[in-house]
Amino acid sequence: MFVTDIRKEFYDVVVNQRVALFVSPDIDALCACKVLQALFHCDQVQYTLVPVAGWQDLGTAFMEHKEQYQYFVLINCGANVDLLETLQPEEDSVFFICDTHRPVDVVNVYNDTQIKLLIKQDDDLGVPSYDDIFRDDEEDEEEGEDSGNESDGSAEPSGKRRRYDEDALERRIERQRARREWEARRREILFDYEQYEFHGTSAALVMFELAWVMSKDTKDMLWWSVIGVTDQWVHDKIPHMKYVTDIATLQRHVSRHNHRNEDEENSLSIDCMRITFEYDLRLVLYQHWSLYESICNSCYTSCSFKLWSINGQKKLQEFLADMGLPLKQVRQKFNSMDMAIKENLREVIEESANKFSMKDIRVQTFAVHFGFKNRFLASDVVHAAAALLENVEKDETPADNFIKALDCLSRSNLERLHLGIDLAKRKLKAIQQTVASCICTNLILSQGPFLYCHLLEGTPDVKLFSKPLALTLLCKYLLKAFVCSTRNKRCKILPLIMAAPLDVEKGTVIVLGIPPESETSDKKNFFGRAFEKAAESTSSRTLHDHFDTSVIELKMEDRGKFLDALITLLS
Image (cartoon, rainbow, N blue to C red; front, side, top):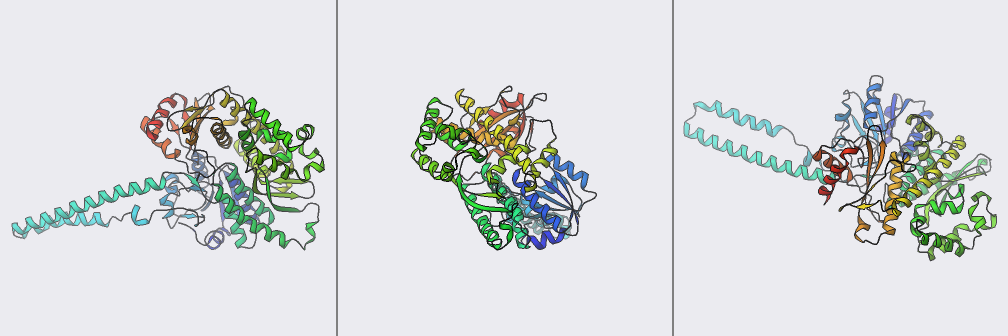
């Protein structure tokens, strides 16, 4: 059931209880978790935080905590399957689900007692009406009564009884026909509703609005909700228009907070926090890197110049010359560049970018200033947190990485944030090199209804791409690069499926599908249902454990028949 008054129906209910908090490993969920933790600290609510990486984790976590807890809060997990069927809870357990995954399962929507959905109603949900998909069993009981009447009426004259039998039979046939029609229509309605997977309003933004309604919102909470929305944009989960409208909502909150703090002394204190709306460059981490490295490793500029080719490298040199920036300045760390150059750098870059047909080099975003020294863009923090969350360089458990990523979002932990930024640079370089080698060695194959690319075991940095966020970023980047470099017009409108080695000993690969590349696309992904059907029809050994249905694990030997089934299905 959708919660209409989030304060009354959610927060006031849990505020005097012990709560189990199940959080999915993505940046938006981490930010929503931070906002909720801050609210819980305000009101001294006891809670247990459990990171859950997939459905199996969620099941295990629930089994461990169901005895001690009655209230469960699920962040970015649980909305898109029938949760009661999955977890089989007791009747007094209550689940509050704040999840961006769409479509929301219809059983969750129409369960009034145990499932409470903390989901914004103005999202384009399109939930089918109750009568179209659920049917009471009264009709079946009537059928039973008809057949019972036949035997009771034995005292009646036989002619009358025969006519009565015929009437009853006709009524029953008519009812069965109506039921079959209703079931066929129900299947059709559910297929249309569940066909595409997409994402709704950021969970962090929903939690921030709860804090705002209760007048407990702080600048930290506002910054976390900014990061949550930016994460959806960086990892390509929402259409551009949705991003722009959410940013506009946040902008109103930012100006309200800045206005509130104008008179206070803390606007001058050394550890103050200031959030500003910026129309900044689409160059990753450029303030923490050199400008040259950032241009080379940003998806937008790299694909526009086609940097994997010799001509692309020449074009980049022309671009730098056009800006009139000395190479020595461009190649050194951004912080060390001359102040005179930095002052109007954005305008200079935008002017030259327009000449090189990069019209959208600037994007609406937010920056945060901690004191006088530290300035971060929202996307910097997203990349840093994602790199810490999926760190493969040390053999640490996913739970350790989860806590580190959560820590780097606090302003008291800037060292960890800088560590995350260094990891993010290495990750972005690895993505750039992998894209270049895939394009140059023609690893992307057109399979008919989709493009397919398989990273082989032994590829540099292949371990990094066994993680869903890193693979999503690579996939998005690779498809954009391929669309920029191919001459085949048909290939420009195809989606991409990518496979990367997951566990060599078990012989499994991680498979991810993304929709076709276009600025105007609605980001709806049909691969989730297609993967399920293809696995079913070929009895391939797959594991659909991720909260995103478009990410699955597959046995290496079954790859061939699985792909063949997908081609047949999507043709």
